[in-house]
Image (cartoon, rainbow, N blue to C red):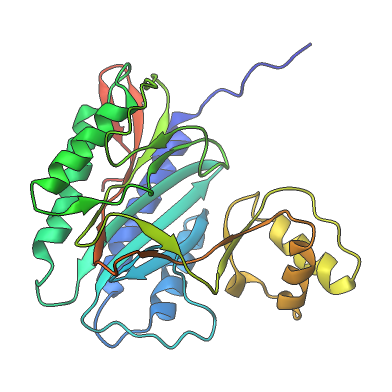
Length: 297
């Protein structure tokens, strides 16, 4: 007998969203001048584990022109001082995922309007969400809200659909009108995340990735490689930080796994004109009447 699709447990998704919201608020309180990025990331990740959940990805702390995918290495000495900080966290609870982000201005309010632009765009997108709405319509609302503040959305970053143990599943939710006429359906889980920038509205990859994801079956021969692979497999195919790996020889093991072409690297993403970037994000559930925000306290 063929098994049907697994029934969605909405309560698990609500729980994941609640822990995400609590983690983001906890992290917001930690981001202060003179504090190390590594300290903040590790405290948030530990707090998530204390709530019987796991990080859905390493805590991202991306500053100024870096839009996303920066997580500190185990020897990162960077401290907060006068930056525009994007704090992006994810939680997985029994397979359900919460994903949320905020922007913290340590510049004394210099970027107040830029921060508000991404918040307004997020609220506009959430207001537009309901079954039958086309993706391009959501993107248009995001772009309109950001442009009203005199800034640009980042066009090659997007929100995304969420499924069990799958952070980027299916749909991409644009931050501009990309002419995608795909319609939302009841029962979808979505991460909505507008990015606003003073720059050109595009990001590019850099170097020195600290975040990785296993995307298939790796073939390894050495004891180092096998032990590192065993650690990575515990992340259920979700992104992980190199600093999470406890096994000695982790760098060697990662290089060996990479040779199997199943290890995806996430390098920090930087605005092409070095424009400053803000971000806001919530996870929502699409019900018959609209968007139910799961990552609000």
